[in-house]
Each structure stands twice: as C-alpha cells, then as structure tokens.
Amino acid sequence: SVKEQAEVEDTQPIKHHIRLGFSQLGSESDWRLANTNSIREAAREAGIQLLFENAEQSQEKQFEAVRYFIEQGVDVIAIAPVVETGWEAILQEVQEAGIPVLIIDRKMELSDPSLYVTFIGSDFYEEGVMAGRYLLDKMRDRPGEITIAELRGTEGASPSIDRGAGFREAIRERAEMTILASEPADFTQARGKEVMKSFLEAHGSRIDVLYAHNDDMALGAIEAVEEVGLKPGKDIIIISVDGTRQAFEMMVQGKINAVVECNPMLGPNVMQAVLELMEGRTLPKRIITPERIYTEVTAERELNNRIY
Ligand code: AHR
Image (cartoon, rainbow, N blue to C red; front, side, top):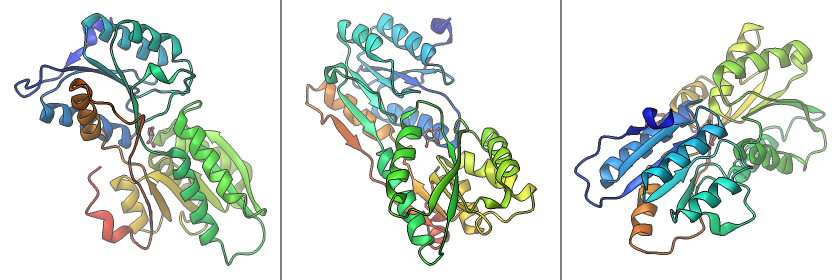
C-alpha cells in the first residue's frame, strides 16, 4: 500500500517542525531526477521533514499519495501533477482538511484558484515560443518549404500542451514552415528513439527539423537519425527543451542545434514558499523560474556550469 511505501526522508535536526508531503509525478527523465534531488536536498537544508511519493506517471497514484499525506496530517502538500486536468475533487479534499497546496513544475487546470496557494515552475508556453523563434532565425536564409517533426511529451501534461502551442504561435510567422509529423513520446529517451524511427520510416529525408519537447527524447531521436545514416544537427536541425548536461555535450558535438532551458532546481523556491507560508505570509499566486535559450555557439562555454 501507499502507506507501506511511504518514505520519510532523513533530515538534519528538524528546526521548524514542518512536515511537507510531496507527490512527484515520476522519474521519466534526467530533468525529473534533478528535480527530485533538488527538492530532497533543499528540504534537508531547510530542516523540513519530507514525505516523498513517486507516482510513476499515474494520476491515480498521485491521488493516493495526497490522501496518505492528509491522513498523516502534514503541514503542506506539494504536487507536481502528471496531467493538467482532473484535480478539483482531490484538492477539495485537501482544502477540507485545512492543508495548503503548492503546485510544482507542471500546471493544473483549475476553475477555483482558492484550491492552491501558489504555482512554482517554468513558463512552458514561453519555452515553446523561444524554440520557434530560434528556428525562424536559423532558417532565415533558407527559402521554400521547411518541414518539422515534433516529439511531444506526455499526453495531457502542461509542458506538452504549452510547448506545442508556443512553438506553433511563433512559427506562424512563416507560412512555409509546416509540422509534418507530431506524436507523443512520453518524455523518455527510449520512446523518443522509437517514435523518431517511425517518423523517418514514413517521411525519410523530407524531415528538415526535429522539435523535441525534452532532451531525453532528443537524445533517443539522435540515435534513430544516426542509424539511418543521417547527420543530426546538419541533415536534420534539432531543437529541444531542458538543458541537461548530456544535451549540452550533444550541442558541443553539433548534434543538437539549440536547447531551451527549463530549470529543474525548484527545491530552494519550494522550501522558501513552505517556510513563508508557515510564518503566515501571503505568497504570489505564480512564481516563475527565469530561463533562456542556448545554442551550439554558446554551448561549450556553458557546459561546465551545468549542474544537472
Ligand atoms: O514538466 C517538466 C518536464 O517533465 C521536463 O521538460 C521533462 O524532461 C520532464 O519529464
């Protein structure tokens, strides 16, 4: 049962006697592992006792974890939601229990904003816009049709929805840019490779550009591209999102052309929010992590600064 699996993190001596229940959505990518570590470390440093549950991509498991946290009488519940919709009922249960909720990383679609205190994470729509603008610049001198393949993340997850929408909005500026193929690949390297393989089988060298919603899928796609004898980053322009060390290494080798950063190191912001909340402070409804785009030109300089 969830109860038996519950993992109470080792902490430094508890300074604030605060207990935080965190429902993490899974461990699908390098980004997610860095995010989990960041939250664990920041809790330890802040002396906050963390009850951690990994939902392995299941919204149902997230509900179970949240109910377990309610039973345990934690002070705050943080949720990184796997998908955007379907949260109202469970958040009402939390509200009835009088426990404040922090939404972490991914957005929830909620009609009642009183169901959560704040949403801490990136602006995924803006990430998509940055990816699209980069492509417009990169292809400025290339006339004619430009065909794009897109590897989307988990279906129904806010980064998939918003990164797709922001990108489309940006490339609308150039009518000859068309999305030839677009499929979900679950934010994982293995699925990224499989789906890219199927794109290549269906469209071959007609694919000019790959836009991958995260680095793990881009890394998988690079393997698929190389297996058919094409050069990633040259025969197919590759743009992805996250900014992991591995993706930077690929950029240095010229196999990825640009990466939009999505910062997973949310732990310090989350613990700060928990402490302020416990002091009775009012938090802003939205806390956005600042981000930027890196390209093959700046990758080498930045590589050593990468901490995830
Ligand atoms: O929600 C953030 C996204 O989820 C990251 O971009 C991706 O790598 C992860 O799996």
